[in-house]
Length: 125
Image 1 (cartoon, rainbow, N blue to C red):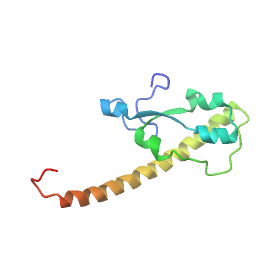
Image 2: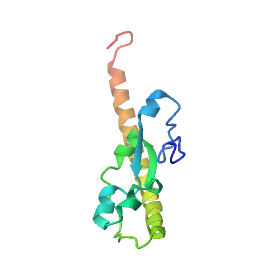
Image 3: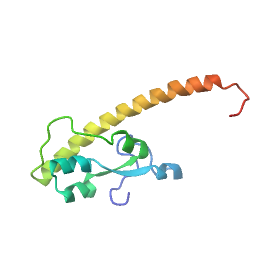
């Protein structure tokens, strides 16, 4: 957090320092994932730099763990090209993660309502 200056999830904007539980959910995500960088033979020092990191909540960090770029991507030839790739990947992943949140929220609300309707008032579980 001190190195990147963030206090909120880079993908969903959840406050990461507002409570102990939120702080525990904090994770550092590589915007361009290490697996993608390895496949593209991107220099390790570019991938491991804080400029390729974003603080996330545990949910967002887990939602897109198997990310692969949607289009054919080649190894960037310069740091500026890497930053352009990073920005494109960030935008793509943010949209994918937003979709995952929508799907999870719908699943939760549907199943929570079903579970809640089966529990009789006054009966503790």
